[in-house]
Image 1 (tube, rainbow, N blue to C red):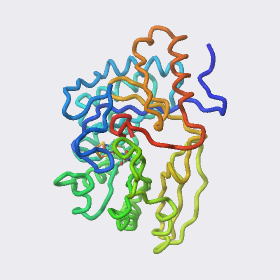
Image 2: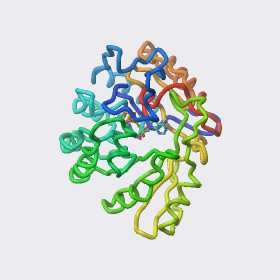
Image 3: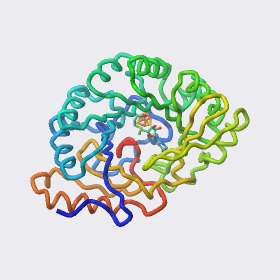
Image 4: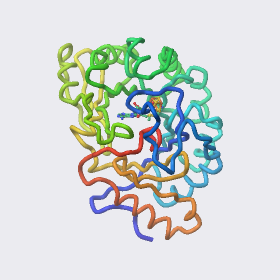
Length: 324
Ligand code: SAM
Ligand code: SF4
């Protein structure tokens, strides 16, 4: 059987799964006002979606893993903590021999779940927090009380998880929060990554007036700190810097500093549809091919060929569908 590798040596090593495309937050950059951002076959909040069961997920993951030898799995969404059988699913994935299981969450329900998740096998969590200022956080998340997120962050640290924070920075909205967020992360002893706004879902083909580039983020941080760039690891989405204040921050700059050249990520949405590239809305349902390794290999190779050569362009799929 031929190797699933493209001509510049890219392979699928990390799988991100959107467990469900619904969420208790409606972040302005992720959810459009009319939910008009969701093309078929994925379905949204208003639709009666039945997420896949842990056994269905495990069956698909198992076959893909047998061909790609996945190094890690990230459970995301939508909001993965809303997935009812999360602990069972984590157990099923561990039973496949995949021990590096990570989570990306808004942390609203993490306070009560962190210890059990850690015991189930989730040792690493990325938590989205776009502002320290609560009024601003409410406005961005479009949720009346996102303060529970901070309790979730602390619970994850106390449970022993490796925690990273993610903040999407938007011009005219929350650039004032870069330093407070960095100082908060530094005080907790965790890394924070600032994300450039990506043209996904309803932002696709928009003018993107809120785009705030890496260069300006660095200037903002240098108003308070001296910074030193750290070496980039293979297939890492962020570039990292150390500050004179003792903190470490990263910037995920899809637009300014694309990282397509060594991208090793494969994505599956909550309907079992796979995507080879965040910047390509073409998806493949792999479940009909699970019994045939030759065909499955060909399908995975086809998805790998969808990866952009150098640049990220965005996609009409929203992040909560494709799994951010
Ligand atoms: N609900 C979880 C959360 O918010 O962490 C997991 C899913 S969310 C889609 C995953 C990540 O995608 C979050 O860090 C979020 O900020 C990011 N995201 C969503 N839409 C984005 C966009 N248009 N540009 C940049 N980041 C985006
Ligand atoms: Fe929900 Fe995450 Fe999207 Fe915000 S970014 S609406 S928390 S899925």
